[in-house]
Length: 343
Image (cartoon, rainbow, N blue to C red; front, side):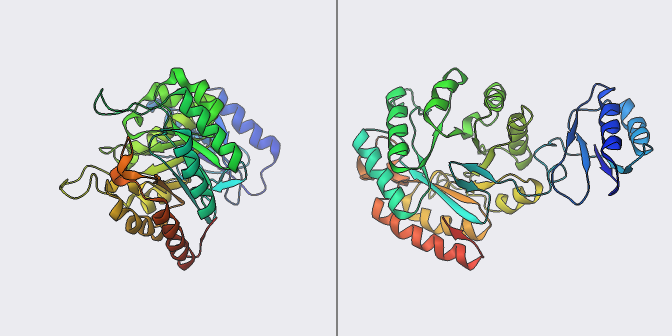
């Protein structure tokens, strides 16, 4: 429910509305954006109270009108937050006019490998270094990541080159450890509906990147974001990374680029795209990266590696460093064509 105040409503009238909402055990939230003061009620309102509460609030001094919000997600919705959210991390603005590129190896293997990739990210104009320290793998015998040692390498590389860092959080018991070493907590596709993990990330207040699960609807993806937002953490980035395909002979997933404008119309949160995991083949990453920017993505998440053929994880989808350098120039050209730029 949203209570829109009149343009000339006084602070006292606004305060009385919030107090009346609180008297029913509900929480009234100030809603940013728009040309008038508005108060939102994100928590569930009992069915037998909904119409009565709307009538009571609508008759209070200073209230212009009351609107019911039917979407299950509230805080992630455009109704509750009309303006685009811009997340600023160490001077890097995600969700603004600039397109932000995050790149790095799927898995951190050695200090030398990570630093070489990080230097390539920096020199090409990327702003975020991604790298996996904990790797959830389909097979228990596959490389699972370096853990704490990998986190230390990630922090060292980010600090030395002035790059924002991003890594995947798999287990909420590692939350404090990962926060200590990384600027952005990545919630992988497998964990998009791990609600205890999302709640813990929300309580941490640390910036979070939530990948869409391959079988998840857009509403389910936004509800995952709602779990983080509901704990008071407004720094949430959405990441489209492909849905289950009809044909897996040529690509790993189908990159749902329509999800970008749809999510941006429904939600105020920044939306980035991971073409590497969607394609599963480095040959198609450049084309889908450029298509993502044309579709309105606020950024890209790309896997690169100094020697993809020797990579311990997802080498087939990783770009060689010189290919990534070329892609950055092409992405910038597309961004400029749609009135944006690559920072």
